[in-house]
Length: 243
Image (cartoon, rainbow, N blue to C red; front, side, top):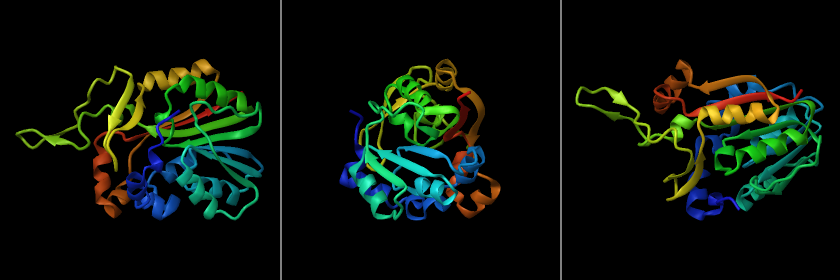
């Protein structure tokens, strides 16, 4: 079973105060870029893997999806999503993506935001997602960028000349990585960019678009702390298609 850090009271308290959890999709600087990767969701059946508070699940319905299945390992997340949702066409369930099995050809879109880096066996999850999609279906997901995950320090460091750098620690060594983020020892799984992309190709997906998210100048002006994300990619965005 995956580490369920989101049900840790200290972690969940801090996580719940993030702008993207207080403001929803409007508080996520990457949302416009994600939206550009998404297909038209009208009349689509959507699986939202790692649905969190249900912000994206509700957006899919508001934009015409016929049904949404939101899945998350965390009881805290699912309870909050259910409390904030009044829509019989959205179903929320507790599920571990490490062992999840979805019905074959049951969805037109499989979506996930910042969740797959918690999954140990990415290949198994992609094969399952491919089977769960209809022919012509789409996979859209975001993960922590492998370069960001492999950073030796959570913030840049300056050399004696004042130049900022982002040390990277063992980028080519894949496997478990532990970070301290609202709680100690948060477990993630590092994979290189090549492994991520080649896994999708090997599964049978056709790549549609890949983005390495960086905030716009207007976003940096509005949220100066985002300037760090101009120095190295924090998020990898992928859109793929099942022919």
